[in-house]
Amino acid sequence: MHKARYVRDYGDDVTEEEKEVIGKVLDYNKIADVYMELTSDPVKTTYHAESTDDLIAYFKVWFKQFWKHPLCYVEATWNQNYYLFAPNIDNIVYNKDCTIAHEIMEQMGMQEQISFHVPEKMHGICSIMVSYYTLLHRLPVIGMLSNVGFYIILLWMITFFFLKDGRKRELWLLLPLWLTFLIIIASSQIQNQPRYAFPIIYAMPILIALYKRDAYKMSDK
Image (tube, rainbow, N blue to C red):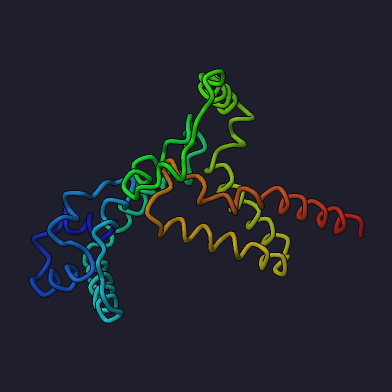
């Protein structure tokens, strides 16, 4: 995402040598045109690096250009990941059927081996269930519990409380969650892809319970 945005906004600053280095990893002539602020998937599809040396040279250019226009990199990161800090935005995917991979199965000639069939008497049930879940997710409290941003904010808060209480040993328990958070930041998309944050979401109730349990123990002493 960073490189595509840089080429789009500061393409005139890119030298011929830098173009050649970038072109060995990404399709330089396409990345600016296919760049989308909310997802890096279109840029990712142009990836074609053939060796570690190509990647090393690419990241040297990456850091060199970062120091030239750091705000460009910050903007690219924020535009793609602001959903992580937006508890008021619905970032949930609703699938009404099982035809998501239909085109892939067709291309691979696997339609006969893998075939999903919904009985006629069940037609419409999926739409009813999606409407039901959509309603739940719009309710004030219940809806918040399905929001990625809510759990990311909780992660920041519980980390702060552990630090405030001087409970540094427990911080090791948060390390996998913070690594997950950083991976999400570096990944290609979080909009409409809340599954990337599931490790944080599923672990948060346990961490909160752990914090409260130990807090009670400390208050009894």
